[in-house]
Amino acid sequence: MSALLWALVAVPLGAGVLLLTVGRKADRMAPGLALAVAAAATGLAIAAAFRHPAAQAPLLDGLPVRLAVDGLSGLLAVTVTAVTLAVLLFSAAEFGASEARARFFGLMLLFAGSMLVTVTAATLPVLLMGWEVMGATSWALIGYWWREPERTSAADTAFLTTRTADLGLYLTAGAALASGRDTTLSLDGLARADDPWLSVITAGIIVSAFGKSAQLPFSFWLSKAMQGPSPVSALLHSATMVVAGAYLLLRTGPLLDASGWGDDVVAWTGAATALCLGLVAVAQTDLKQLLAASTCAQIGFMVLAAGADATSGGTLQLIAHAAAKSLLFLTAGAWLTALGTQRLPGLLGAARHNGTVGVAFTVGALSLAGIPPLSLWAAKDVLLAGALETSPWLYGVALAAALLSAVYSAKALWFVWRPAVPRPDASRIPGGAVGPLALLALACLALTPVAFPPLRDSVGRVLAHAGQPEPHAWEFVLSGALALLAAAVTWAWGTRPLPLPHRAKSSFADWLLFERAAHVLLVAPVMRLARAAAAFDDRGLDRAVDGSAAAAVRFARWTDGVLERAVDGTVTAVASGTRALGRWSRRPQTGQLHQYLAQAVAAFTVLAVVLVLVR
Image (cartoon, rainbow, N blue to C red; front, side, top):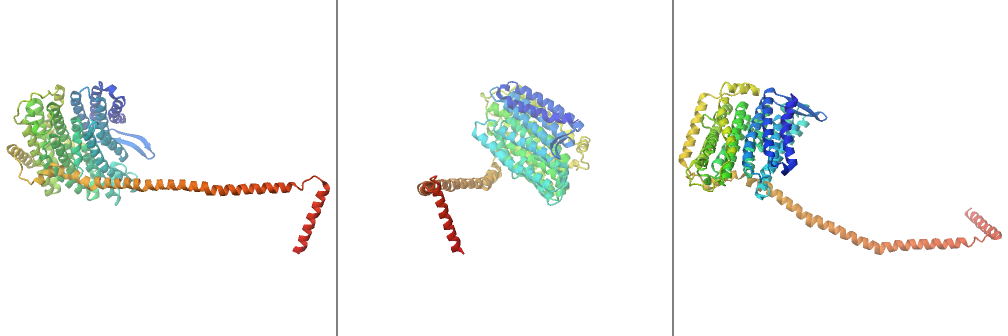
């Protein structure tokens, strides 16, 4: 059993390291090897989801490496590996021979492997290992075309933002150790800590999850991540890094409930992110930026589910979103390669360029919009039932965010299906890239029955969460009808400007100005402090060091000119006196006996006189 789990994480990690080590020499074989590894990992994940293996190995004294697969991690492992396989299949057809394919496919496998470690981690140290490797490989993938400064700068922004939030996990680990509980380094044991450590642990988990999943106020880093290749966006935004935070919150649901405040903070932050980033998506004129903002919004629903104790709904949303969003990003990448643009006005008629790709994009967009009978429509209503049980106000905000999903999805469809002038310079989309898109489009439809009984009840049993909120029939009808209405109104509205103030439009188009705020509140003060420290170093410390050195040289010269002469004179005088005394002392030494007798008489006489005088 443990061999199965070790193989699940070791196969993609080992293959990724191998490709990165060999480098350009492995460019030709890299796509085939990566596809074989991804297929093998998918098979291992399916087996692990059924068998629920556990594995352990020694690491530190009393702190072993522990991995385990249960219902939630099993479903996530299958989702991660299946989407990775589809994305790599697309990439094998899309990436030309001139690219550094060994580096790309090696990083993708390492990225997916670190996500599998994160998903199967049973303790905080193992979770941190996977979490850190995932962040580092995401930085390398976003900045894959490293010769372009704009892309490397975007990778730095994404990395530094998520790393700042990742400090929450270290805070959690420290608080767990400080609590004195032997079991608190286990993810399942975090909820057993006592206050105040329980609140510190909860805060650390929430901050790190919000940062990784691009929830408010960390959402802006996902906009910068769009500078990476489209397959990277498809994997990063669908089933791996960005959903890792939502998965962590779903996993630590008992901790949020035990804290007494964590579940409310998580639920309302998720709802606010879904609503605000939905408005950001509506304001975008770039397809990948629209999809990035929609990713934040859709993951907001998963975060809401974690706070509302709707684990089944959040898990179904995560799986359905992985299929739809990976499909949409891959399609956007195919159009970018074929048409040379990702701007919505430049994509007029793009869906007509290749009918199969256009239909696949339409299926993904309609699923994202929550249109029946596609999977996200049903999955979203399962988690909205939990929001309704928690608070009618929370349900209302989430339902409004769901309507925005229909608005931005219909907006994208309006552009890509509008008639456009012929494109004689458009390149053909490779046939090998169309197959994965068709499979993902079928998944958007095939996952719908899972949100309804009896399959939904089976999911609840697999997740070991009994008594999950169940939506009524009117909730499905209401959300579907509102989504259709919102999509129809958006289609009829077309490109006419919205009746909103210019400042509001620019704010939403610029991702709520959070990046600017981060620069004003954090980056600029840190840079000013760094410049002040550099100036103090140059003008203060450097001058002080130079002055000290000059003073030391002057003191050395003075010492050489004054003290050295005095010391030399003293030593010379002592030596001269010693030599003189030596000469005087040699004079009485004549060797004549009568002189020695006279000297003795004189000495005794002097001694006798002294004794007499002293008495």
